Length: 236
Image (cartoon, rainbow, N blue to C red; front, side):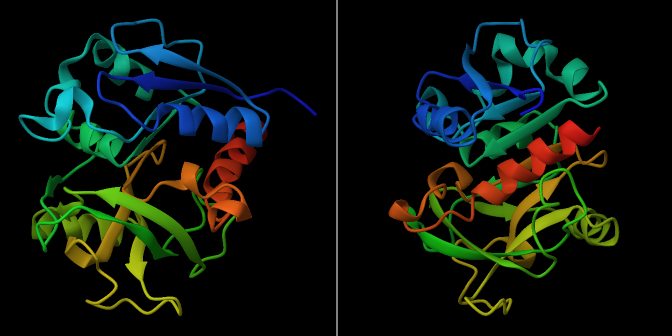
């Protein structure tokens, strides 16, 4: 079986996908996982931190803006700069990583100004990363979204850098992998659904891979993201 990966799921007031993330990595993928309360600073023992979806602090100011100042974030830069340490932010977790400056860009309200909750298709742009190595380049994944502020935006210079350095992990597409305006459900620049940092040890994505773990839920494509990370860490 080999060594299990140690996941820590950060819980903020208002998180509502924390249990889903714990279930995905602990019960489906048989890895070690536990919750981390947002006031904790003890994060050194984990291989990967998961920032789950939800509405941290009610999202009353701006999504992720208050959570960014939680005590757990005080040690986050040190954690991220260590070798073989990983962070994945999903939906609200992605928003928190953006607010904290761990990933470039920001989130705007969806183009239709409505909350979107449905399955979408995303295409794998780069499969040579810790989070996508179990995927094929150009593979289309079916993963659900649930957000009101998922319209990713960055300036042209940042976008060009993300493209040139292949730090865009996923883009919204149709079922055949075509990048279209119709498939871009929230209006994100360049159809972006997920990006990574320069070191490729931090991933932020709006779709919820933890909700696509078994066929009974409509798709098990989300497993590929977690399995990619587990595979990468065990080989490191």
